[in-house]
Length: 162
Image (tube, rainbow, N blue to C red; front, side, top):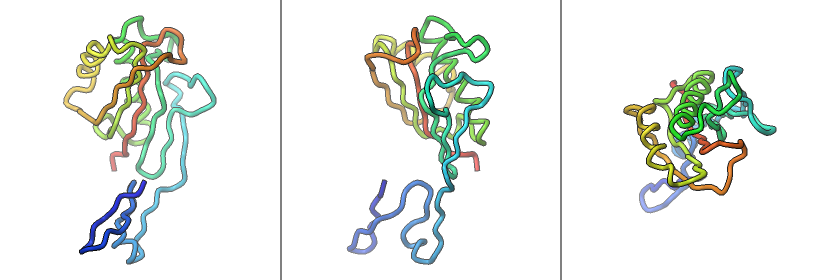
């Protein structure tokens, strides 16, 4: 993604995603993210497909879609949207800690709901678990989810604490 930086009357590209501005680059001070590192912490649910839950490049972290599965039992945390929402946010906390971050450093969360009628109940559980934190968020109704019985999944983008 390229953002434009206006300088005088000309508009020039400015680099996004942690790199320095074009002006800094012209001075030879380019800060590029390192290669992508992937992981799935042992104390979280196993992915349901051939992927890792976490991908990280430099300070940027993405966590792929997570369902409300209790890693100890490998079953959904409960049949209701509230217990599944809280389990997902608990899993996010563990995953973020494994890569030097936390819920205070989340930039954006996507919520994928099997039924938009669950939106209010999900919001309540989300607000309880997230507390004062209010990252950007998108909620989307979907036709189905990979985990049988799952009422929602979420993914997120975050940065490290440093």
